[in-house]
View 1 (cartoon, rainbow, N blue to C red):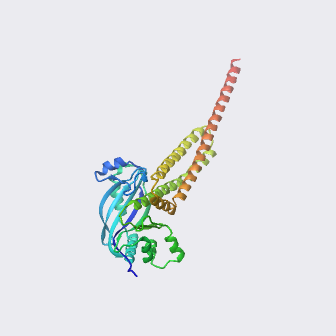
View 2: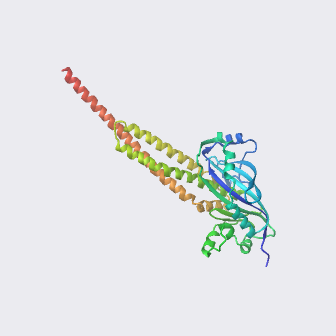
View 3: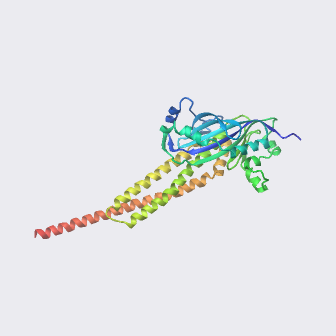
Length: 360
């Protein structure tokens, strides 16, 4: 029997995403940040096979101390035009066994990392590029356990047979049930004999001997899409009851100005629907998948695992309710204007009759 492999080189990558603004002007952000800013494209995948709709802007933030880990990590930020900023902390790993690697991953997941300081370091210089900055940004996080090289040549299936990835993927120290173990290992993918991706809800294991970053970039995009849809789902959760309550209040207080009030409310609802629809389409088109089967499978699995379709469906349902509300408001505004016009005509006719009687 061969001894269990050790990790010669790898990294632990902590990812934190923030819904920073309604949108970010990437050219303006690049000008504000300086020459170090650059568009980020997939490194090993042809553009015709899979490409960002609008490439995110990568900003190096330099080395950052990792509190409680006695190590420093390389910090990088990526700005997405639909208002998301993704910050990564990459901690290099050398000469570790897999149990020690799992322990390190779990320590990183529990550590208090300097996300607020990094976000503040971005928000100040980039303020001029942010359209409608968020007062309290929503957040998402994800953790990558990446192996670049093992101390012995080993195919992905042989690696799975020789090491237990469940503690690394689950963050648990107690043994899991067979059903839970099977569920954790279900979303795994390989293209070459020596690469492997195993996806979890909040972390992933990646064996990538060629050190390509494309899988990490694709998973980051899936998390960014989830966060943006979550932000609009929460916006609609807050806005929908308010709109419906306003409609009810206006219906109870009908008067000669109701047409104008309905028209103003209808314009407000229409603007909200247009805004959410526009940003949802930009999020849906953020990554174009055409020919790269492997990345397409990883991306599709991540989208489903992160429940992006269900959040998207919830947003669509609430938008449909708002569209129906807008249509009803428009009809009532039109009806109110017609009633006002009829009243005006009747008043003019009555006035004409009165004037005729006075003349005779």
